[in-house]
Image (cartoon, rainbow, N blue to C red; front, top):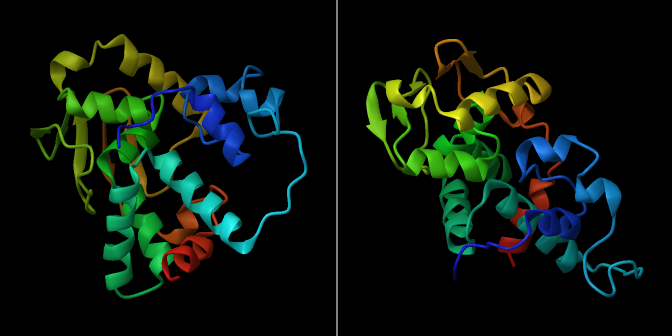
Length: 208
């Protein structure tokens, strides 16, 4: 199955919340969720009674779309999380937060996770001094991430830094905006993920 390439605002409306898929636009009055706070389609305004399965599916879709993953990728993350010690749902979210494309977005070097993924694939970043092009790399505590020298003048990266002041970087990251670099102070905890997610619904869905 190919990656979704249609309107990103439509996804946010379907999930009923801002997934911040369009970066800076999501913080303005142009945000589709603010202007049309109901699902897209002919019957979007109709009242619907959701089953337990529907609630579980919507929560899984919300998280999967927020991090920009295909169904197969997301399920593999869940299987790995389920095989580790601790709460499966928390393990899953922490793994997703540790993805390189998400970390670059969190550091403010990209306007969205999709943009971060593209920048990584084009080789604009290095991890511990080594240039990388794999967005799914899981960062570790102490890792250093930097924009490569010739990409520091990139207008896309410079504009993204302006948005960082609006959303802020999480406490588990240290960012040096002037030097275009950052580091992983510590691995994220469940408490560091403030976006409203009910991961238990995802666990219940995959446990059927």
